[in-house]
Length: 286
Image (tube, rainbow, N blue to C red; front, side, top):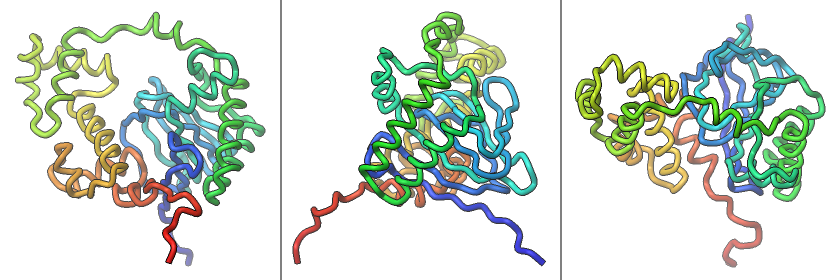
């Protein structure tokens, strides 16, 4: 008789690049709900298969492949096989990717038309950077991470972000106004009927326009905004219970449920992993 597989995850701050975070996880039962990141995500699948929806299609990333998710793109994530999947994820902020793009002479970060690709050299570089960060080797981790980002962009990205922006439909005025209202009322949001009335349309029309513009209905979008705000407060050292109240979740368990569905770890584990790293040699003498 064998033990049933369990989910394990660790989330932490990069030791050499403050604009980068990392996740190392093995998931079997955990499923990410529809969510977004305000960073890029480069995920190296080491074993198993990850299945995820992204840009209107169901994708599968197999062992040895690298999956890419661009900022603010709605996606999910779950096991593609009964045994789950194990992966390492690099979450570089837009600033870190912009810096890497500059090394290639690009004025802005490029786009990634292929969301998942099997590329042994990209996988090797990503794994090496991730493992150096796991060891806490600041010099190696920062060097290898920059090299991995430059390599992935040089080989697998295309400078098509501007062209994509030209054809992407702009959000309707009603959807944009509703979004602004939600950002200003995290703790006490209006009912759907009241939100629709405030922007001058019917509830059904608002649901359709909002989902078309932002990929989520208003209530799910609001919870994503709350999670992003919670993440920033946790980074500042605010206690999870206080964070829950500050961003409009009913209680800490409510925060934990939504936070884990988006990040893979509960708020306390996230906060512990991204706590500021004290530079070596700065400890007070005794």
